[in-house]
Image (cartoon, helix red, strand yellow):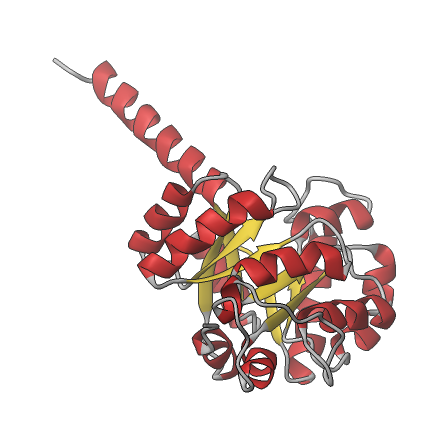
Length: 256
């Protein structure tokens, strides 16, 4: 049965630290859960993780009692439903650039009368939906949209105001492309844009999210009102491995 705890924590204003799971592995989910992450996000946009892989990752998350969402590669009910029916408790949708696109996400995640999601007997409702399932799911599921384009920046007010959107996530990499400074995720124009959009999001009573790669990043954005933070499994693995090798090789150079 669907777990409402993540959305409850979100609505309570709790800062939430998570990771994109871009390694198609249930074990990666387990390791990140044991590390103490608040939640995980299966990355089906930038990693080759389809619903068949995702369902095994969801099982690992359930066993370790960690909330798990998914980012699919498209803004259609057919894309999102497979992850949702497999057991994730919310979705993140990239490149949302208008209120109409944000509304389409809500329609795909929520059942009528809130949205237009189709109902079937699936994992998330233990294969036979009971009479209270739809209302429970509509209360528990989380809708995350990403503003990453120039049009999305220009139409941020209407996106943020869309009923049913819980989190507006600001991706610095794609924003850097949209702002003409590709790859410069800490360029002043990128930082200023994320800060300005965060102000709009928080003022509208929604949660703002962005990428954090370090404790310094976290402190910087937390002071500016960001509530939801994501690193990535790949980046965390690469960073830890690189530090281990660098420190070990440096120690070898100073060995008597």
